[in-house]
Length: 263
Image 1 (cartoon, rainbow, N blue to C red):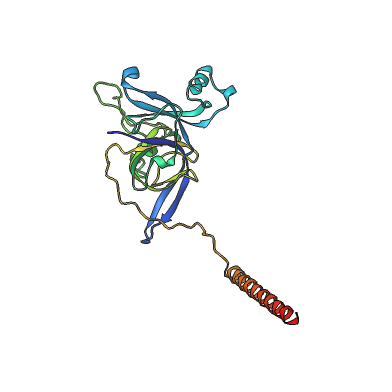
Image 2 (cartoon, helix red, strand yellow):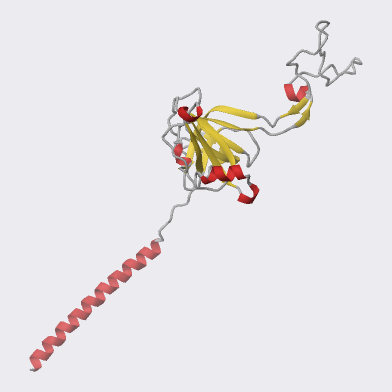
């Protein structure tokens, strides 16, 4: 299955209303223009992929390798690079990809880095139950039994306390609610992983390829209102101008007639 995708920043969450009155919670993703940094093919790299770059980085803060890599695409070094395998469309190095790559109603997967929680216990990290609070148990939030009589060691995969969060997480089968190429943002239904201003990757859904019916949302953009008073004034001026011209024409004709009679 061919894929398409774009890199962006998570701005935050809000809500929109459809014209039928349904409320949809959405995540706002800012999507500046992505640059195609590299195109990989089966002949050269063993697989098909497109490498996207976004957010300029100062050349003095970039390595020589990244500077040279960016010059091949006639652009500046980028802070974030990401590959999309089997990308749809024939892209060339240096091409620009905007928010218009997606349409309203498309089903997408969004990948981001989850919020870091630091060191957490097994109850918070894995959802385990706490111990008895009474009868003198003196064991409330511990991880429980760690092993068995044999093989006398902790088995791999045991849910224990440790670092929580700051992992790559993908939320699947989200719907594109709005695409605004001019303002460079995309509204995605539901929540996506990561903190505000975190980098996210929006790409075509891997499991669900059925496109939903686009939802018509209510727009709160103010349309330019023409002042009726100005229109009336303009019409009055046109009428006055026409009346003045007619009066001048009548006076000219009368003057000419008077002169002819005098002669």
